[in-house]
Structures are given as structure tokens and as C-alpha cells.
Image 1 (cartoon, one colour):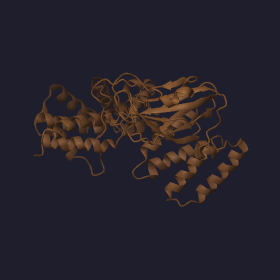
Image 2 (cartoon, rainbow, N blue to C red; image 1 turned 90 degrees about the vertical axis):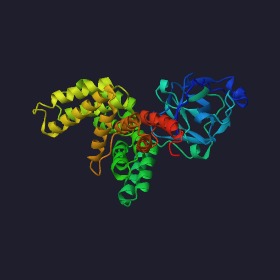
Image 3 (cartoon, rainbow, N blue to C red; image 1 turned 120 degrees about the vertical axis):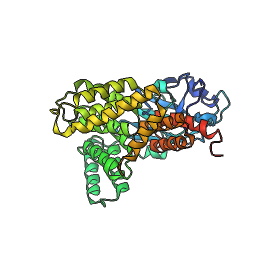
Image 4 (cartoon, rainbow, N blue to C red; image 1 turned 90 degrees about the horizontal axis):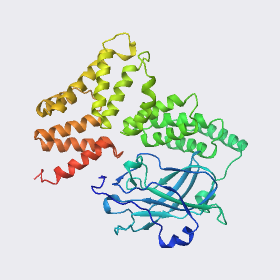
Length: 426
């Protein structure tokens, strides 16, 4: 179970003594540490930008892991065009509090061109993040002006060569032909071919289409959907093609992924651009508002969510909003949440237990409860005195979370530690 620590932790990444000679000439080009409590599993890509050609001498990542550290794995870098550098085997460092392997460090001696790079850690489950720094992974990168340092000679990096535009196009044509001839259900091979194209042929005619096709594979072909891979792919696409004709569709897909994985802050960023231009002329008007309200609830902004639910309830009585919206259905959904929020505000636990039990019993076979509703149900059961059933529901929250470390899963983890430790099963 991954939870945040309950006391301030000074996260200061320090170079080891072995790195001192190199550090004399180095400068910090990226540092996401901050003297605040940390949690595990970064929720956003950990990126840094180089403004000039620099030699990367040291990359450190922080693995607090509940004060246990983590066995060092590997660290790699990935450019915006999906080109991979590394991975390099990491060494472990002890932190100031004596936690062994709290820091992982690699010294790639890698010469990089100006641009943005994403840090990839082989164990994101124990990699620490800082909510006050945007939930990115905690890392530190040292670099210096290019001197005698040469490109990394690791086998992985040495095998990667930058193709000319003509070579990229020729290779992309070959890869697309291989994809066409592949077994339609050999998803692993198809995925590998698309990723190779995006890595080696980023400027080819097929590159943008490959993002779209691969997103379809992750979303519709895989069972269950590869939401983590889909998120990374869509973020990379929008960074590379922000003004593309497909950008709106891909941004919509990314919004859905953020919602399905409980990355509420990231979803809200998209809504902040979407909602101001949303009008009742949009056939999805009420659906988008309902989704927006659920994201607000998920992020803890219940009062703002209530106002949006009330807006939906008011708008849904107007049957001119478009046939898709099925206004009666959306009206009922908004009214149900308004009623639940009212009961929560009044702390009427027995009535809430009845309401949630009825809601969950009436769900269809294929329906999945929202993680926020699951957490509320568990909290209501606990408040009403049904601790055993509350424990079951808290565990259901963690299963629904699928290790994305949502706000709801973190709250459920805290309650489970409290309840299970109280001999409830004895």
C-alpha cells in the first residue's frame, strides 16, 4: 500500500562524494524537491528543458517509500520525439535520515541538444512525488557546458541513430507495411511497430497517424485498456501537435483518461479551457457539465460541484438542448447527486446508507460505480457503525484505483490502516 508520510520531510537531493569532482563544474538544471511531505507514484510526467547543448552528468530520483527506500533499478531519459536515452543502471544513496537507497543516481555523461526531456524511473510505485510541485516525480539533474564528454556509450543509446528525413520516411513506409501484414490480434507486435515508428521516424508522414492508431489500440483493443500508456501517448501527441486538426479529439481522449484514472487536477486543467466556451448549443452540453461536476467532487471541491449539478438540474428542464442529451436522464443524475450532497452536509448517515445501497443495487451488470461514490459509501458505513462493511468498501476503492494513487485511494488507505489495526476481524 502506498501512502503519504504524516510529517514534514526535507527532500534535499545531495550529490554523493563520488560525484564531487564532476560537481565542481556542474550546475543544477532541474530540481523538483521541496521541504514538504511527499507521497508515492508521480501523477504527471517529470520533465525538464535544456536551453542549450549540455552534458548531463548526474540524474537522481527520490524513493522515500515509507522510510524503507527501494532497491535501485534504472533511470532513462526520453525526448519529445520519443527518442530514448538509456536506461542506465542506478546506484543507491543513503539520505540524511539514514534511509538506505532513498536516492537513486546515474551518471550518464550524456551530451544532449536543447529541448525537453522526460525522466523515466523503472520503479514509479516507490518514486516519490510532491503534491506542491504539481505531483511530478522528485528528481534532480546536474549538467555542465559540453567539454570532452561524449555521447553516452551504453548499448541502448549507442544503438539509436538519428535518421535523415528521407531515411525516416523510408523506414516509416516499411513499418506501416509490417503493421498491415501483422496479425490483427497480435497487439504486442503492432504496439512495438508503432512505438518504433514514433521513436525513429518522428518527422515522417505516418507519425501523427501512428499516434492516433496507437491510441485506438490502447483504448479499444487492449482488455483492460492500457490507460497509463494511453495517457503518456496522448500527452506526447499534444506536446508535438498542439494545433493539429486532431488535437481537439486527442485532448478529449486525454480528458477521459484523466477522469478514468482519477487524475483530477490534470482533468480540471482541461476543463478550465473547455467550460468558458461551452454553451447550450453544444449537443453534449449537459453531459460535459455532469462530468465536470464529478471531477470537481473528485478533487474535493464539493461546493463548486454542487453549483454545477444545480446548473444541470435547471438546464435539463429545457427540452431544446438537443436530442443526444436525454435531458430527463441527466436531470435525474444531477438531482441524485444534489440529494446525496445535501445528506452528507447534514451528516444523516442512516439515510445515506439506504440511498447508496439502493443506488449500487440498481446498477446494471456492466456499470461501475464512481470511485468518489465508493469512498463516500465506505465513509458513510463507517460513520453509521458498520465497520466490517466499511472495510470491504474501502478495499473496493483501492481495487478501483488500480494503483493510480487517486485522492480517494489515499483516503481509503488511511482509513484501512486505522480500521484493520483495531482488531476488527477478531
